[in-house]
Length: 104
Picture: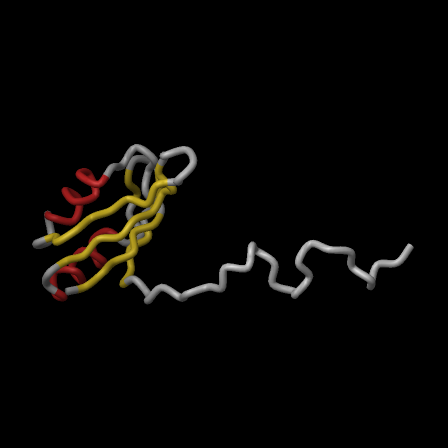
């Protein structure tokens, strides 16, 4: 099984349309468009899992870089997700308090 990252999706594409795009190249086990949790609108990318690695490579070759409804698709093998620390977005160690380095 191969998981593909699909970027540059038109915002009108839903899970069914994404599935149809890739089903032309082989069996799709899942197709998910990533949605914004606040607006419930597409973020313009998604993931497709294909059951056959050779079919996944055919889909990459055929779709990567192609224009689709005015947007350029980017299709590649998905990289493993990196777990990022949940620290509220601060990475410098300053947790929003007074910074003594900026004295006036």
